[in-house]
Structures are given as structure tokens and as C-alpha cells.
Length: 105
Image (cartoon, rainbow, N blue to C red):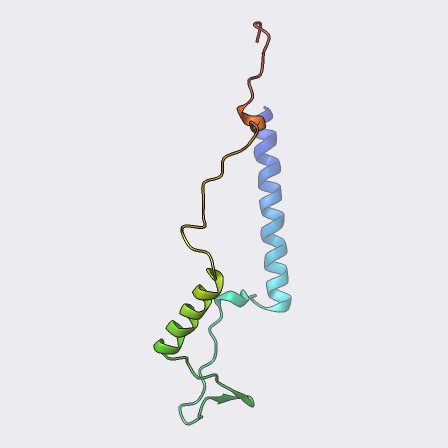
């Protein structure tokens, strides 16, 4: 009997949700999610202008590689593999300490 009550509540919930959606679509029209709409294409005759905005030129491959090289040099400035050394703690880390547990666990 409990299962029938659960199914009845689920059906009532789904039915009321469906009815609310139908009512709002009848009043406001069918809602289309923003991420599903496709952007309008500019006319072929326009020279990269849409609404007064100028389209940015695409950077060339050489310029992108030069920027990448510059960023890599900036990130690794002055650190060589000889300067890097392995971390060795002077005292044991808390995870390395032995913990005594009672035998009844």
C-alpha cells in the first residue's frame, strides 16, 4: 500500500509540473535556452564590423609561438636543474609517526 502512495505522490508531482510548463508556454511562448541559439552571421559584404565593433585580427602562428616562448622564459627565469634539490625533512612528518592503537579495535 505504501508503494501506491509513493507512486500517487510522484504522479501528482509530475502532473503538476507538466501542467505548469504547459500554462507558462501558452502565455509566454516556448522558451529556448540561450546556449542552444545560434549566433547570427554578419552579412558577407561587411568588413568585420558588426554593430560598430571591429573584429580583432587573428594572431599568426609565429607570434603565438614567440609569446609562448617569452612566457616560458619568464616562468623559469634563473632556475636551473642544478639549483633544484630533493626535499628531505629534518624532523619526521606527522604522517610518518607511529600511532599506538588499542588492541580491541
